[in-house]
Length: 194
Ligand SMILES: [Fe+2]
Image: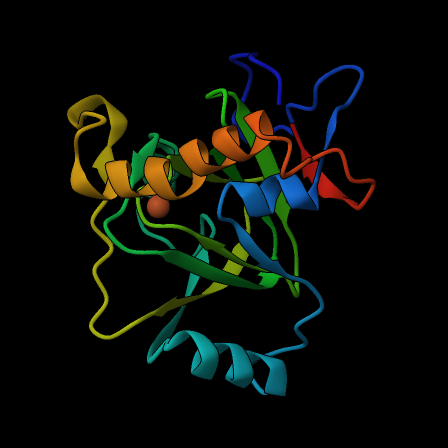
């Protein structure tokens, strides 16, 4: 995405646009599904079972349903990590998850109805609604949910979850690239925008 300070809800596509391949997202530890048709979709149950997600709830992020909407979406947009995965399934509406690539540059992911995403523990990210100001999303969790964000300005690279993420994904990918084992040049492009 671009570096402009314009409204966070704008697309912020680079010009020319630089789509990011799915393998590049996999290297960053992102898990992504598309086309989930609703709460009753058997694929959702399969994912829950496979990944041990025992908790779900649904939240609406929009000016009418979320008290203090303007302040809340600014706080969601503070760059942060969690000490657990962040899992979201977009049921209606849309929004942007921004994640950091291996060079610490932002990649913007447009979450749309049917999309489900897992951001790994310790990965820097932020969220905003897009200019439609509406997303209905399912939140999933393993066990009792903990939503605590740790803002980047308040933590160091020595923080345990952060270190785990860097070792598991960033360093592993860098090493594999050096050794010529992985390539992220694939043509399997998604709607993700750098
Ligand atoms: Fe988060």
